[in-house]
Length: 314
Image (cartoon, rainbow, N blue to C red; front, side, top):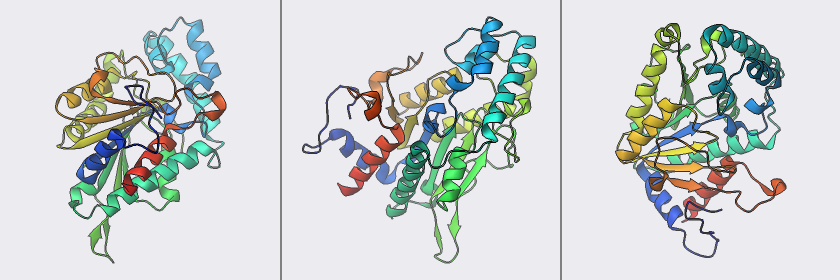
């Protein structure tokens, strides 16, 4: 594993990064930002949406990723591209999540470890029993990993808002008379519906919104406000996994939160993305796959899980 300094860390020498992480997770507010890369190969990545990619290319769309490219189209073209994307997404999703895939296993194990970290910290007040997960993904992979492990969570999205914010719900074990680790999930770009299907009203495009989309996405901006509120809490920590840096709204929140003291650990599976507006001099960049062949590369979820397990032994 290497950090932003490029220094190789071995098991035989003190690791200042782990020492800092140990202090941070002892009482800090833990937050995650998940992009499409967090799913690994347990679900199709955007690069696998060949029909949609071909469609937007035909219409002259431009951008660094599929969502941005769709957003670059005019309104009529965008509607047409979204029809293709939604049909393709649902055709993949109806086949289910590949839970035997190592990427799902690694994500699941990470969530279990994080819950254990929170459980061990006896000094935490009930509000700090909460783990925030801000995800840009439409699928329910995180929710299913939590359900499979019997972990308590609360999920909201712009179009499936339960009426309560991510700050409103903390789990309580009646038999033990104690608050329990609670995963609060905010699905920033939308979510599949209760039938695990995606449709247009569930999707938020991060850039170049039309006036109609802006009006419909008021809950999207409310969600971003909640995100900023959480990330600017004292002693807040943010772990970024699988995010390409394509949402300018999210980038602005990260930048402003870092300026106010947010501690960020940004995991890069391969090359670090170019994220406009963020000064990475104040962010820990973790590259677990530096110098590794394609066969040797590991999921960033596994890398963070290994780090947390080492911290618990310090």
